[in-house]
Amino acid sequence: MRNDDYCSRRQFGKILGGIGLAAMTAGCSESGSQTSKKPVTASTERSLSPESGSMSRSDFAVAVDNTRETYGENGIWGLAASEPDHGLEYVGAWQDSAIGHRTDDEPAFTSDHLVVLYRIPGLQLDGEQFYRAWLWSGAVPEPSSQLEAIRPSIHLVRDSDDMRRYDPASTATEGPVSVSFNTPATPGPDGPTIEFPLHAGEVEYAARETRVGDAGGYGATWTGAYDSVQGVNATCVMKWPADRAYDIRWNAEIKATPK
Image (cartoon, rainbow, N blue to C red):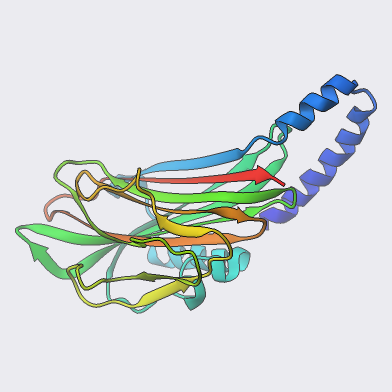
């Protein structure tokens, strides 16, 4: 997959680096060493609506399988390995990816992201329909880097749309981390819980991204220092007028640092 391409690029970069090294001055070498220690970030942002082109149910299943090939138990659905039988109505799903490059244009990490939107069937309140979004982000650092942060988030655009409950809603410092399709305070049918590994650091809700209510938002964040694969699963419940379609902004940000 994509990692093979990056290995080839890294080897090619080493060859070019060896040629260039003979012509470098001591001052240039010192400057390059300093810049190589800077953190590397990459982010994605997409607007989600019926016009934005979501994946079909079958294409989403393929995307999920692809994450399992690269991320294993760190992929979407975590240790469950497959989508739980939650009884929700599939609306659409979207995927994205981002590569973090160092100042020498070598990759520091690769990352992949999925979000899937469900309608909670049979639940309307005062003419409003309830929905659930499931977010997943995962990152793979290069050998010279370690992951520092993974932050998927989702934001409602219209004032008529409300952010409701979300999970994770507290700080987890030990794994596996549980994420539930429902909580006792969340309206709708009971749902299953999945777990995903926490190899280092901690997972919590992102305070700057999270706000319940009109045009609200929710973000989950993993922070730590880890030199291998890490994934994050999160979910939130939203509602908007039943006669309107969804209008959502989806973001993800990854940060890594040189070893």
